[in-house]
Length: 349
Image (cartoon, rainbow, N blue to C red; front, side):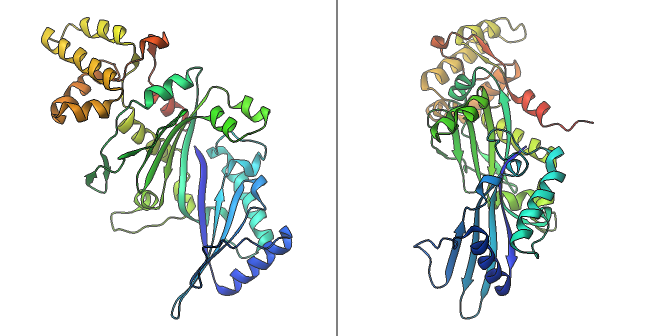
């Protein structure tokens, strides 16, 4: 449900100084001041509670002649508050009460005036789901050939997910307010030189992750009256994580199972309610996407986006994802993961 969150709380000057001194006393080391600090804008960083899930604690101080602002931000992996040796599992709704207690105990050791966990403000939250499949590598390869979408924000459409950074083991799209990262969890841990037990536990895990940055965080909780309340409790319902993840999965991966080109052709030709001419055009589009190695590259070449999108929609309507499985993979069919995501993220009644 949730992998990482960046949460913050405002401070006054006295609290800032007391927390700085408390962290120094508890850790035995003063919080680190980066070289880029200025007289006006200063941050102090500590990692001393990282093993318990508080990956980074940042004290911020902004001073001018007329303004003084103080705050603390914590980068948190909440599941590790209650399972310190876990590097694969995610926070679930059933964990929240225990997480509240553990978090509050830790921060109140630093300073007694911190608010309770659910009252902290959210700067960023990463919703995620683990999918267990022996075809992780192949799914990632197919995801990398998926759509580069127009995303709907506050009633306006813009090409916001317009930068792709593809690397082995990951499908990654970024915008100003959202990052999508669908990746091989085991491969990630191997790259981080994790211990062998953690690497083994991540076998066959495909992580679907939507990282909501400040703009998306505000959009999630903005009311019709343009009121924004980013207190953490607003972001914890399981239904919200399902809504966010499935929305972006729909805009990129979309509906339809994956087939080899030959298998998809047979399905198309077996359709009794489609004319021969349309069947030929659907197959032609599958071949174009296969040749150009992605939907968005084929769309750029095609020119007529409306017509192209219409054929893509028809393919999905008969259960075919426009991205086909390369022949050399020798896998004729893979199920679409949307139903698995929905089932995993639907609260039990």
